[in-house]
Image (cartoon, rainbow, N blue to C red; front, side):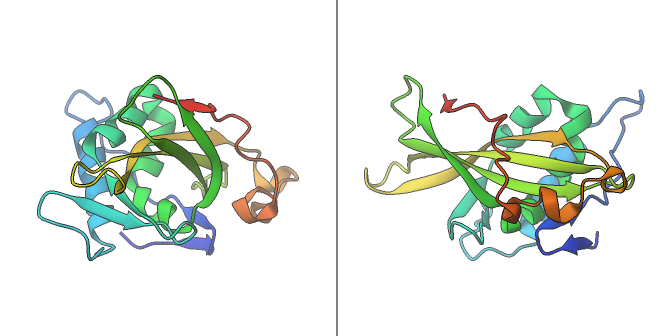
Length: 185
């Protein structure tokens, strides 16, 4: 898979959604493609069982987990399948969105969103909201691991109808996190 990028902040979605033998969306293949996409970034913190992607905006290494990928697919698989398969491409260029307050969960110290932009083959822009939880690593209380919690999308107007890719990119300064929850659990 080549990483076709419209500009450095908008990722071109170039993955066909895999289907199973019954013609349904194949979640297992989507997760496999997402992990493969993340592994292709060759993060030096990767191990045989852990896969990380560095956010260029925050400088943090994000742990990509199967549970985090599945969580986003559980919500809206039709909308989230394509961006999930290219999660690493999106995380690399996504911009910090907002801080999130943990709900009554003592295992989560804090969280935040990353906001990315994608465009599909029909020139539909999508805002991609990636929720990151910061949890204790277990080795030291002061050490935290940023974990992917979920992926969510919001389709924007087609650029040919008035919206431009630049207008919708995270660098435009527009409040793109208006559909984010302010709390995580």
